[in-house]
Figure 1 (cartoon, helix red, strand yellow):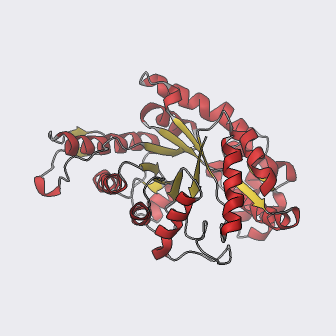
Figure 2 (tube, helix red, strand yellow):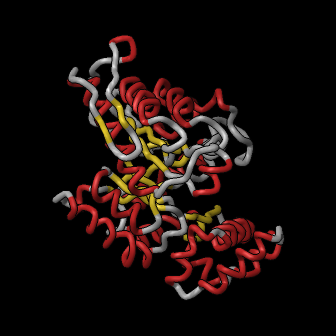
Figure 3 (cartoon, one colour):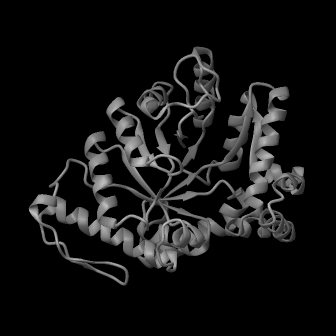
Length: 351
């Protein structure tokens, strides 16, 4: 199992500082170098408060061996030509260490945050990835650009805008997925699927893996060639006393997911659909403080993995070994002693 770190600014801290003190954007390269030094397989960024491609350029320039990737970048607000160029540049800068994780975003954000018309995401994502790969092939092989689909008609590439071939042109594409259509699409066309933290082991077994297999069968692919990447919701701390506070934070995060209709499929699978609908009502009326009270201990420990530093690696291994190929895991590393603890956790996760 490869162990990756989601590295929004502040998650993996260089030097002596309080664990919750965020990194400045200019320190991202230092954070990526620290992730490399403690033995992580990859460092990832998600598209929330900073541009992920700019951050990863800083990380690529400051490292030499660690993998780099988006987990995830929003696809549809960007032209596939724009994303193709960002990925091409990062692959060139990193010497082949880049993985492009793409997400579709929900209807409200596509329409009201990005100002775009809504379309069914799975067919749109299929066209998007096909368009990017046609562009990459044009640049690498020197042939004409000729891609036509429902969403894109691309047939113009001139020398001024053609970066030419690179040493590592096969850029892996991962798709963020929860529902069956997007999971099947990952099996059909992508090198990996990136699962949301709300995906429980049972959900992976009963929903994700069968959908991946269905998608792979469409194009006669071996489903084992599609990496399953998990970003578990983790609560961990040095000791039981500190873990209590962390657990409260994790419960609030589970409550947020509980209230979000896009993630209701998981809660319904476990028989908590009515509670999820109640949570949605509370969120729509801005009664956020009441949401954590809906999350029972059973629900908390089904969705999240909670344990002390001594316990957490074994619990993650028990839940996800045999189900996932990559796992994202981060704890603060403010000093050398913390780095040693983190290293022992990594070793146990890989055991």
